[in-house]
Structure formats: structure tokens, C-alpha cells
Length: 281
Ligand SMILES: Nc1ncnc2c1ncn2[C@@H]1O[C@H](COP(=O)(O)OP(=O)(O)OP(=O)(O)O)[C@@H](O)[C@H]1O
Ligand SMILES: [Mg+2]
Image 1 (cartoon, rainbow, N blue to C red):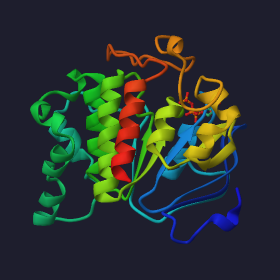
Image 2: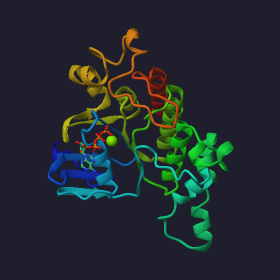
Image 3: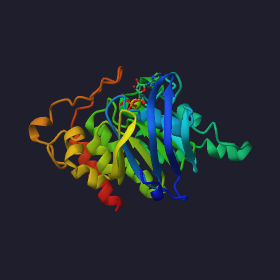
Image 4: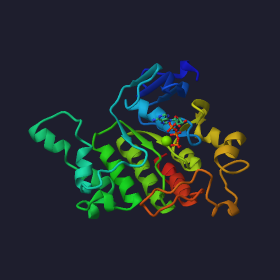
């Protein structure tokens, strides 16, 4: 990347990052930045290194070389949600605040979940239920809510739509756009559905085999024929051919136990993301 574009005001700044698992290099010379309040997408094929990158941002992994500076509170919605299945939704949310400092009254305030229920009202009626018994979409909402409990200025989401039906993804996309609009929370979104990611986020990085293959404004990337062919499942632009809509994409996966699958072209979700983005502008 052109490092002259990096700015001290960025909330996340990654330079020339190399991450290895033993002898295997998962990230090779990756640079990335996130400005305050920005929504940034990270797309790429399976095994490209997306989770490795965000796990390095949040300190789960240690770089072999390069630098990672995170200048704001960051929270991650992990790939696969990782609920505490035997705990209630409410307890799962409260656990999200465990890292915040404070005692007594301020501690109670930090553990107050009411604002998360306001933001994600579908969770209200399941607040006392075991998280492990919820649908995939509900669990993803709990995972987002739990991450929000740490009051992040940067929210990292590893696979928003994984295993979820389009309508659920639509709803989640709307919530993310509202969070960004109303609270100014920056979002780093890893998403298999590249069209959804490009519609929701203003800027994007394409990661391939551990390297940044492309970066730029989502609008520019969406009209690039290479990106459209590789990630949008079409010859050009954002309009998918009708016959493709019922075909599962190559990256589709089902989440065990959720009973929900992700179709390859989540047009409802994409349309909602477009609407949410329009609203935000
Ligand atoms: N714990 C690990 N030990 C060894 N290799 C790993 C480990 N985790 C990931 N890898 C390897 O690192 C590379 C990047 O994996 P990563 O999970 O970051 O990809 P990804 O882009 O998130 O893929 P996906 O879209 O499937 O989630 C892959 O080759 C993967 O096999
Ligand atoms: Mg991953």
C-alpha cells in the first residue's frame, strides 16, 4: 500500500505485517488502515488469511514482523460466534464487559445491557434463554451484542453472514449500519458475500494467499472486472444474473447445529445493505 496514505488519526494501522504458523506464512507484508468511524471490508477466498489478520489486530496472534497499532478500543465477533452455550443470553452479553475496568456503581453501569437490547431489540424476548439453544441468527446477534458490551470504537466481525439465511443477514446489516451511523463505531467486516461487504462498507481490501491483492473504495472495486469475476460471481458490475440466485456459491458453508444455510447470492441482504448505506449518507 502507499504508506503516505497512512494517517496518525487512523484507529488501526497495520504496516508490512507478516504472521506465520510455524514454518507456514499466513500473512505476507500486509498493510491496512482504518479511520475513525469508517466501515472497511476484508474479502478473499477461504484460507486467504482474513481471520489471521483480524486475530492479529485483536492481539490473539503475534506478528513475526511488521507493526500493528490499534489506537482505540477494539472488540471482535469471532468466526463461528463462540457462544457460552450453557449461559443465558443476558450472561453472555455481560461477559462482554469483563475487560472494562471499574468497581461498584461504575461496574454495574458497565454491565448494564439495556442499550444493547435497544440496539438489537430481537434479543429482548430471548434474554433469559440458553444461548446454545438459539438459532444461528440469534446467536450472531448475541455475539455482536457481547462485543459491543466492551464499548468498542472499532468492531471487527469475522464472517457476519456465515451460515445465516438472507433475511437474518439483512437485519444484521441494518443493525451494523445503524451502529456505525448513530455511535460512530468503526467496523472491519470480513464477509464471504463480497457484494454485501462492498455495499455496506465504503472501502475494502481483497486478501489473497496472505497478500493484499487489491484495495480501494468499494465502488471502484465493485466495478473492477477482475473483482467482479472473482468475488461477485458475475461478468461485471453489481447486478447478478437471475439464474445464479438459487445456486449456492463456491464459498457457501452451513453452520452445524443452526439449521440455516447461506445462499451464494444474498440479494435481499445486499438490497438492505444498499438501503442502509443510502440512509447513512
Ligand atoms: N492454527 C493454525 N495453524 C496452522 N495453520 C493455520 C492455522 N490457522 C490458519 N492456518 C492457515 O493459515 C492460512 C490462513 O487461514 P485463515 O483462517 O486466516 O484464513 P481465512 O481467510 O480466514 O479463511 P476462511 O475464509 O476459510 O475463514 C490458511 O492456509 C490456514 O490453513
Ligand atoms: Mg476465517
